[in-house]
Image (cartoon, rainbow, N blue to C red; front, side):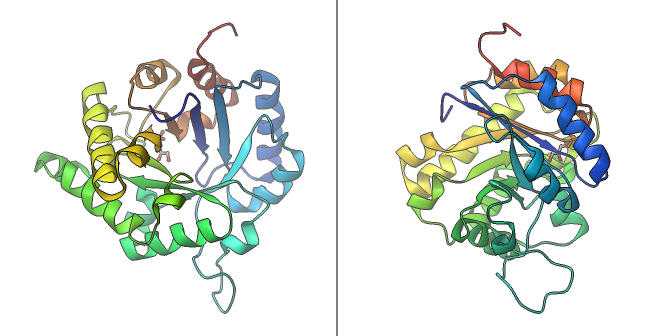
Amino acid sequence: MALDKKLIVGNWKMNLDTHEASLYLHKLAGLVKVRRDVEVVLAPTILSLQSLSLQVERRQFKLAVQNLYWRDSGPFTGEVSATQLRGVVDYAIIGHSERRHIFHETDKDVRNKVQAALRNGIKPILCIGETASERTYGETKDVIHDQLIGGLANTTSEELSDITIAYEPVWAIGTGKNASPTDVTDAVLAIRSQVKHLYGATAAKAMRVLYGGSVTADSAGGYLSLDSVDGLLVGGASLDAYMFSEIIKKAHKGSDS
Ligand code: 13P
């Protein structure tokens, strides 16, 4: 584990309108206590970010954008830049498998976005993970290797401390199929060993690595107890404020609430 602090991220994907997002935040705020050993990040749709940033108590929750464009400004119709998001969000989810597979984002796009986030003071959460067929063919470690090299190519070791890696096997996202603790441990160790190779042992140890893929309040505790895992990236189960609060509670060491 990199830090003595767990990171729990709720990725709402394309769900909840601005009104629903505000009601959700109000409800979650009443369910979750501020804890020194847990950092909670909410990733609503881009439309709700501005209003939630005014409503949110930043000691309690941070905000993340689900995607951004890598140029800072210019003729890029429909896109939003890291420069525009600066001050609104603390984190950016980058290279999510839905971006890679549905919107054909390449490793080059991902690396440009990582750089754009960093130069605008936004911490990237870089998502990597293999598809079902890559897993069947035993290519998991190769995919991890390629996506890490692809996403981090222009990143310096100083910048690395602001990057979180999320291991999200594509076959486990939204499918109800959980990666086993052994799958997750193997993948996270492969990630750390690759980062060690690129940046050295200290950087590899210090880097936060999350697991994501069909996490529920029931399965969260098992992943969080893994030594190598620093937190969770939660999709479906983060859409229910009560269920998400239960996941957040699992990340707090003393389970006194
Ligand atoms: P689910 O938790 O719905 O499987 O989604 C995971 C995910 O993609 C989070 O980014």
